[in-house]
Image: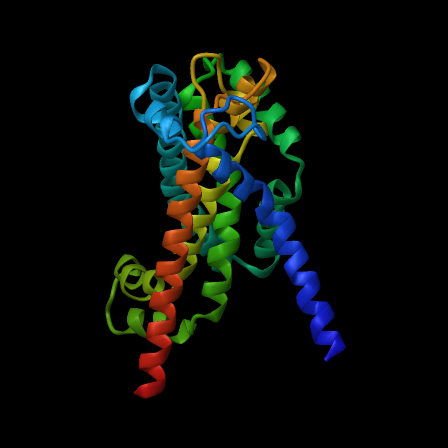
Length: 266
């Protein structure tokens, strides 16, 4: 009983530590105060400013930049990572170990090293920094995570089905489309979500590979904070993002629990 009480108390403290700052931002998104912690009465003006004001339009543009970069990087890295995972899986034993080791280096490597390396690479090839270099950089550091998401699904797959498909006259491309892709699809979806999350959350690599004329949310917030404080409308945007993510999470969990209930009844 005491052990359970202590574990629950510890979990409650951890959750409180994680979610208190978010709750604080959400509460103060409903006041006009330009300073966090200074409540000046309930107001939805920050939300109006976000969608109607000049500064709000700028923030929304940066937000859409972030989403666009994230989606492009996630789609391309999912394709490249899936192809890479299939190539690694069907390589010889020694080559598989070598490629797997090489793939893990960017994952465990410090982001600042990746950012500086990409910056130097773009300078060598005289690529002007901006949206294109940010997308290329995000594809580069997201792809290894997709490989790590897809490889376990390939290992779980019954390879005899693929070989049987070939024996029955299917071309390797047809067998890939009909057998391998359905088997690794959950891993590809997980890799896509991880790549998208990593992209919209990244600051270090983006900061090294972008220019003053192109910002994502992370670099915009950093520049805004350096000037002496965050734009109040960012509280409203943060609240909306959190609510949307939380809603999607509830829907996903609800559907999953509903499917489990159906399976039990069946």
